[in-house]
Length: 254
Image 1: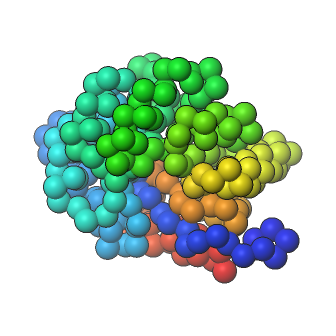
Image 2 (image 1 turned 90 degrees about the vertical axis):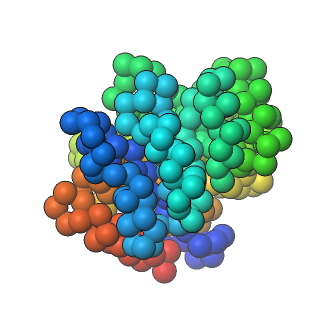
């Protein structure tokens, strides 16, 4: 339930990240499984948007995938991207509904932690400004830290997405104290961001077991979930996995 009986600020949206459908495809090559088909299944199952990360090394989503998603899906596309000139050019060409700027390193298996927007303010300003001028909603993927929130606001971002990875990792490791501390940070950061006029999103590593407390944060407007749903789809099917996640989110908001 919302803290202190406060009402939620809006319907909680579910963005489904389809990156790892492409990871499976690329492991063998060819065209199967098709990320576009996954996006269409997600739409039918209750997703409110599709997220795809076009990485510099193209390890999963490809340029052709982005072309097809833009042309063939009706849901809003959230393009995750590094702050590079190549990615900016692609984003400005396609003009997706939103771009979430994320940290990216070639050696990492997945995005590790949030952007340090305070340290990278001067570098990020060009990308936030160019995307905003083109009418693209800009989100910054950050840690639940008041300083990062304040700098994201100063940069002109409309949205912040808080990294939930440490919270989820602590839960699955059985470290209750760390889990609760990290959840408290996520709650407090969401409140601060909302008070500063930013739209609040959360994402990274969320599962059936961990989504409820995050969905119950009253300022949360969107959750972005991918890897777990694609993994769960192996056992239950993608449609069923997304519908179950949607149910758990709705129960937390009830």
